Image 1 (cartoon, rainbow, N blue to C red):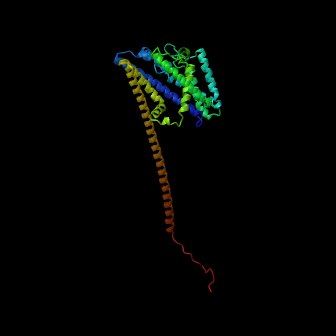
Image 2: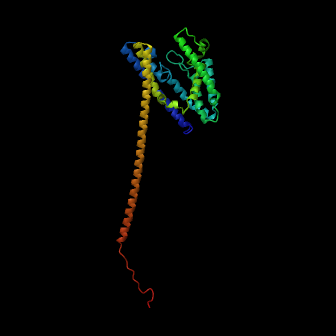
Image 3: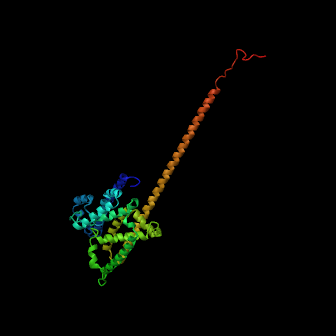
Length: 362
């Protein structure tokens, strides 16, 4: 936006929204086909598990609701909120240019009002609320946008304070210990869950981004940014490079993850559902997503190399063409000069005769 202006930035955002929309429709078709094929082949019903039973019962209505982003089966409730947040992002950028804290204040106010009055959009078919309420999750989105834009603003973002990483590390360690105790308590009732009764109401509402969830996520983000900087050697590890490749091709990897999740669920229900099978399917899915990310990186680099080669060849051809044109012009000039000299040499010579002596001779 700083280099190309607001109009160009808005155009790029709209292009990205269109890519997400096409991907959303495409993944819905693949998911429905995958579930229907498994139902016919394995003689088990999976339509209710993935929420496409309404599509099978009344496809003429469900397909319209899919196009309107109101029908969100299993795994298809993330891209719609992302499209909505990107849709308002040009306005956020405009406000960030005018005053850095302004969009953060407005977004925080909307977040608190949503928690207070229960504002939320509804989906098809049962008029239920969206699993990810965009009116609440927009606050996290605006926080990230403000933090990213702060380096281009004269305002000082609170994330640059020296005391914030220490506080974030303390919160991260505390939340990690509590979360581990809750996980163990879920598997073994005899193990006590730390502050389970006191804190569970503050994290139960995932749809509206419960305050404790927001605080723990921000603390974890600040902690990771504190220990892993841009020039950190950790980012050059092989595993880190693979994760970075997945982030560079996030949409493709996300869509593949949905397809693999459906396939993994079907395999777990058809075969033995134990911890070893789950680990094997999870590992296979991770390897597949990293593999597709590496393949896309190679393909993109290969296309860039070919494009550079074409540009270089075109530049060389243009240079050669100009050189040949220059030589032709010089040859034409030389031929014209030779013609003039030849024409002058063929002219008859005229002798000069004096009628009288120009000077008297003595």
